[in-house]
Image 1: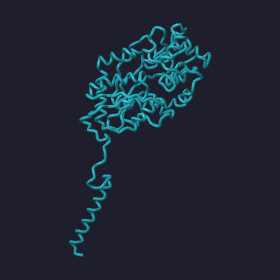
Image 2: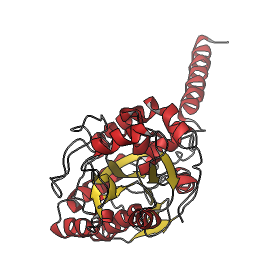
Image 3: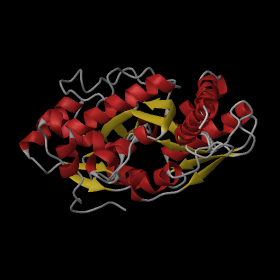
Image 4: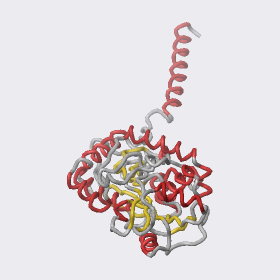
Amino acid sequence: MKKGTRRFAVLVSWLLIVTVLLAACGGGQPGEPAGPSDSGGTDAANWPEKPIELVVPYAPGGDTDFHARTYAKYLEKELGKPVVVVNMEGANGTVGATKVKDAKPDGYTALWFHESMLVNNVIGTSDFSHKDFEVVAIGVYDDTYVPAVHEDAPYANLKEFIEDAKKSPGKKIYGTQIGGFTYNFGTLLEDASGAVFNKVDGGAPARNAALLAKEMDINAGPYGSIDSGDFRALAVMSGERSKLFPDVPTAVEQGYDVDVKRAYFMLIKGPDPAIVKKMSDAMGKISQLPEYAADIEKTYSVQPGYSPTEESSQYLDDALERYMQARQALIAFRRKPEHEFT
């Protein structure tokens, strides 16, 4: 073979090798179209171009549903497209969350949830957490949850009730809802105080009726649900007193290291970061609207609260760690109670 021919053959061989390597690195043969992007083919610049589905993993009518629908109403105005709330209950929110987790990552299916999602992961009800989604933002912080007794009860504050409960472990009836937020902070209160309650399951209306009839000793729920004049709030379970009812002291002030507030957040499955930012920014604008503030204060005595993506992710990371530290207590506390209020 002539020298020029050999050089040409070597050059062709190298070109073939490079072509094969480039094709392998590109994940396909030359000339094939690129695979779908993480945004599922959605044009982030023009998003949204169709209605957005917002999944609420509980039945209609509760606080989670209320806050989702309130945000959806204002998001439609900010984004220019309908935001359709879909209730999908089951397994303490896991059914609805799974639906969103498995949805096409195009920015058109979102989830509205709260810390029960983290607890589900900690105790094994689900095998995923917020880390399996893109965190959009925390839209509401509800720091109004209070333990309350009947107005005729002989307790002026939480400390007096706890000291009495310690005298008869397991006798004081604590109204809660299995798998709910009140269940979780009840666990933390028992752990922090050393008291042991008789946990009774029931929905919020049934529990309020039972407390009114003096069939239970203490109930837990948002302040707005017990602010009727028939009940007395013993403590605020978040770290600071509420601006809406500043005379009620915190549990921390009374010697019990319990600082919990319910964060309602929006998650979405794997879209373009620009879509996440656009949704988060819209939620931030809504949190500043006076009419939005009036809506949530009137119904649940809650003030607007918002954290953007990065801050929300850190908050949820920290909350997951706190619940993980209390894992054994949470599992023990979720045993079926002896009876229920219906």
